Amino acid sequence: MQLADLSNGLDTVWVVLTAAMILLMEGGFALLEAGFVRQKNAVSIIMKVFVDISFGALIYYVFGFAFMHGKDAGGLIGLTGFNMTGDLTHLPGNVSHDTFWLFQCAFVIAVISIVSGAAAERIHFRAYIVYTIVMTGLIYPISGHWIWSSEGWLAKLGMIDFAGSAAIHALGGFAALAAALFLGPRIGRYGEDGKVNIVPPSNLPLASVGAFILWFGWFGFNSGSTLSATNPGIGHIAVTTMLASAAGCAACILFTILRYRKADPPMVINGALAGLVGITAGCAYVSDGAAILIGAVSGVVMVLVSEWLEKRKVDDPVGAFAVHGVSGSVGTLAVGLFAQPGAAAHSGLFYGGGWELLGVQALGLAVVAVWGFALTWLTLKLIGMWRPVRVTSDEERIGLDVSIHGVPAYSQERDFIDVDKLRSP
Image (cartoon, rainbow, N blue to C red; front, side, top):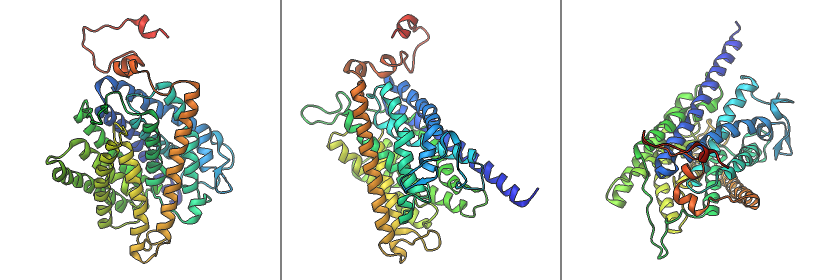
């Protein structure tokens, strides 16, 4: 066996393994969101995750991948690779096209999962299926092409986003904000007198396990983006990922103790995730110290933005925008400050690179944020012309598990369900 063949084989195993780790994150999303919402809506969360995986993978295979990674057309969109056919010779040569597709497919599933949390407890299941098709087939692939295709217009400007703080998390976060605003708050979330009513999580231990699974999968998310098992930077990427997530979590523990006189468990859970989101863009390019700072800032800003949204009556049940949209923004801009010479194509402001990279990062972030928000709002508006996007007030009060899916998340052995009633249209 030739040395090159052995290297390619190792790369293939590495990419497939890390893709599987990212796919396992869907279990984390399912548990995290099911734990954060009320018990009567746990099944609806799980069903949306199954939609993310199944429809997301199929749509991305048929045309999403082509729009994102196909041969470029004017820096805006790819136009080869539909059904994984056509000219794909420009893709990385160290792994097969199928292997590369699998890794990218895991990413697209993660993007749509961000939005599902913000729309929890009130979006209609059928409307969500249609939105999933649009997000995984058009919204994410097109903006992803701008950043990650070598011919994409943002890539040509020099934008750096190693594993997706902007391409995945800022896009998904601002799309989540649009969904939360479009749907409006849950019934009873805000009183007529302006009072904020807290909706207690149904199962914080479950949400915590979900966060731990996401934490684990993130090492595949970031380290796997090398697409090579022999890349010497894998260890550093894993270390910065760990340090940033730990710093985000620790910062939230200390900050909420100072602010609320007690460590706030949901905020602490989201703090770890905020640190992970924040480091995703620069995990290969920043120092250990910068990773700690990025994680800590992401965690604290996440808390402040969560409070700000609550005051403005924006109902985001799992904190999707604060965690992904805001921390993704912090991480994207941080690359323009902390990218080290030799590690990235351009150095950050604090390493003598001037303002150029920071300006490009800010431009790319703004474009992705507006694209994700506007296209999500437009898509939901168009869906609403066909069928209701939000469930009825009666369905919401009963809970989506029973009213939409016909089965509760938890039942006693003595409980029975009328099959005819369950399967009636």
